[in-house]
Length: 158
Image 1: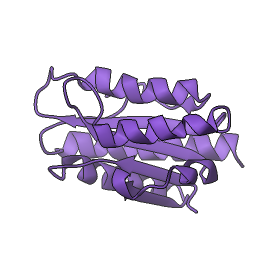
Image 2: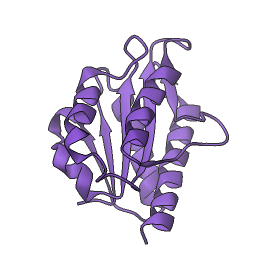
Image 3: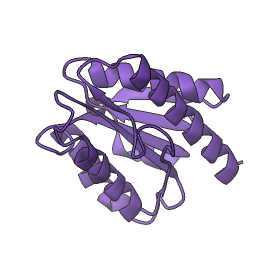
Image 4: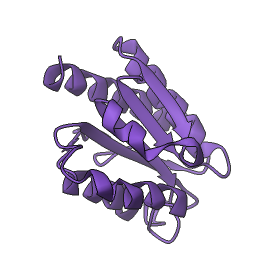
């Protein structure tokens, strides 16, 4: 099992591209990472990783059903994800399309589990946001998020 699991749902490929950029950031820090489509994730995998990064397109200011289902299924692990590192990312069709509320809905679920959430003090604070296809700025933010999550995993889970 990898150190960090990136779970994403991507209908257009934009969120998948972001996941791949995040994975490269994790790899730059020397940790193992797997990026998996939400439909291919067994919720039991959450117990086996040190860090979890979750990405979704923004649908009406919320994460996609495929992402919400993972958190719904994770209820059986309440308290067992405590201390794991978490982060979020999203893509949307509009600048004001509910991006932050989508990120916060993912982060809220992580916080309820007792996870330690990693943000970015510069740029996209709650997690990277792409409007339509990721551009160079978004890819850079994704790489930074991957690096920061990997660094925090190393600090908390040596």
